[in-house]
Image (cartoon, rainbow, N blue to C red; front, side, top):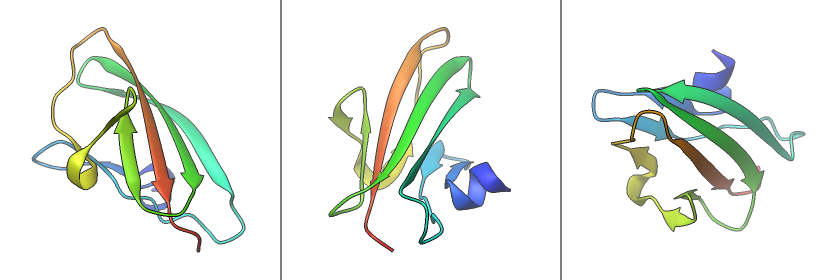
Amino acid sequence: VLSEWVLGVRPTWDGLLFDPCLPPAWPGARMERPWRGARLEVEITRGARAEVRVNGEALAGGLLREVEPGKTYRVEVETPPA
C-alpha cells in the first residue's frame, strides 16, 4: 500500500506508473523496486512541477512502458508542494 499509493509507484496494464501522493510533512522519499527483471532506483522530491525522468530523460505521462532486464534505471520523480 505504501509503495503503490503513497509513493505512487504502481503497476498498470500499460507499464509502471509514477504518481506520488506524499504526506505534507514528507520532503521526499527513496525506494528501490524490481520490475520486469530490471532494478529501479526511485527518488521522489518536492519541486515546482510534476515531472518524471528516467536516466535523466523526461518520461511522458509518468508511465514507464519498457525496461531491459538486468539493467538498473535511475528514476527521479518531482511532485509539486503539498
